[in-house]
Image 1 (spheres, rainbow, N blue to C red):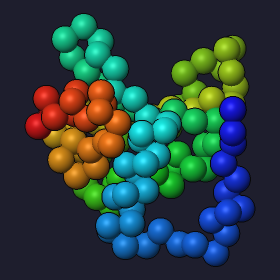
Image 2 (cartoon, rainbow, N blue to C red; image 1 turned 60 degrees about the vertical axis):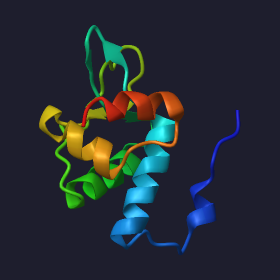
Image 3 (cartoon, rainbow, N blue to C red; image 1 turned 120 degrees about the vertical axis):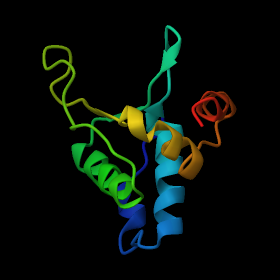
Image 4 (tube, helix red, strand yellow; image 1 turned 45 degrees about the vertical axis):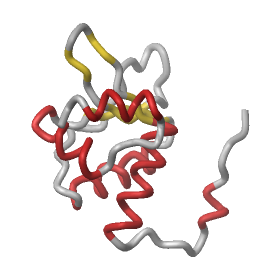
Length: 113
């Protein structure tokens, strides 16, 4: 497994709407999921780096996409594992605005529009 060093991005600022959209899309492809739970899919992001999740959540808010609270799903399993869900009312906006370059994720998202 290769870990990405945030030092590479030192001095780089994700500032434009386009940059934020692309950044969130890439982050979703790597650290997000859109699993099918029965007949209803849902969208979430998960990561050990809580600070990076907070940044993603802020970018999504700027793009008009509502999200739930960042939380730890099980402190017993892993006290340093964080997750948040995209709000159900924002699924369509997420699919349209963010989307995915991952073919399976994109097919599921397209059904949410």
